[in-house]
Amino acid sequence: MTIESIITNVRNGGRVSAGEALALYQHAPTHVLGQLANVIRLRKHPEPIVTYIIDRNVNYTNVCVAKCNFCAFYRDVGSSQGYVLGFDEIFRKIDETIDVGGVQLLLQGGHNPDLPLTWYEDLFRAVKDRYPDFKLHALSPPEVIHLSRLSQIGVADVIDRLIAAGLDSIPGGGAEILVDRVRRLLHCYGKATSDEWIDVMRHAHRRGLRTTATMMYGTVETVEERIEHMMRLRNLQDETGGFTAFITWSFQPDHTELGGTEATGIEYLRTLALARIILDNFDNLQASWVTQGGKVGQLSLAYGANDMGSVMIEENVVRAAGAAYCMDEIEIVRNVEDAGYVPKRRNMHYDVLGDPIFRERAVPRMLSLATARADGAAGEAPDLKPYPARSREGKHRRLRDN
Ligand code: SF4
Image (cartoon, rainbow, N blue to C red; front, side):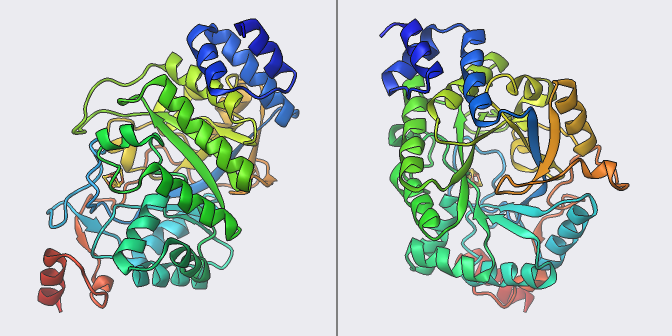
């Protein structure tokens, strides 16, 4: 097939094979990839609407045994810089989120051996008791697998218990590249193989949870492996239809063991456009302005993205690796409208909730990103004491503090 015939096929609603996607990526000019992605975006979203969600990205702990070599966020068990947030700290973050019109927490953290499944269940129940309508978009597949291993309970049963406690949806983090060669090189094969990541999502979709899917590119993978990743997501979406959206971002190398240089903005736009072309069964693609900045975020809207993701109130993970872009709702709306689109607030299911909230009522401006703990303090919250720790350090600490 020639590039022209592949383009004609896509324009006519056809699906690309892995080989055709590779040919497009290797040979189609950037603006042509963008135009083709925009054809699919317009087919799915004929109205000139760009959505976004007001939520807060809370990382409940930075202690992690996985030790992915691309991660600058984690701290070892026993590290003096390790922290676990307390329930009250999380409630305060929810209060602040609700103040600016927020509807959910994106709750993710390290694989901390001193946090048993019951801690998560109690946290979710406590959140739902206090904030019945507030949503919990929580625990990426590797965290679910970690809890399954820690508690010796199957993944499906862990998901059931978390749903019973208040889990509303699962974020697609920890996917990196769903190819085991790459995962071994990134030291993330142990936390979840490609099959295991897919399997958690399959279980979640079967239980009726909607989830997102992600891809972190720009480390050691080839373009063929990026395409293989997207094909695996497309296949599962054909099977379950449970993904709401796809989000891709480039590896942020600062302060990581892996190191290296960050992919360019053009590579981001080409990868995003390719995703829009391959993932023809995904309704929504997010612009990753958090890693690319607002200006490339705007351009993303011409390269297949129809959503600006989250108003970032708090961010700890990519900031640790060097990216610290901040946009509150006013700034997101300014960028969306300047690009010629109509901004609308949404929930995790992509139901439109309304116009920008700051046009309905006064909301505090958020001109800098909050952190897990405002003063950067480490340490476990006292309400962890009743929970059994697994690590030697955790057991000693809780015995000493009791
Ligand atoms: S990416 Fe997640 S799982 Fe990997 S080391 Fe960082 S916190 Fe742990």
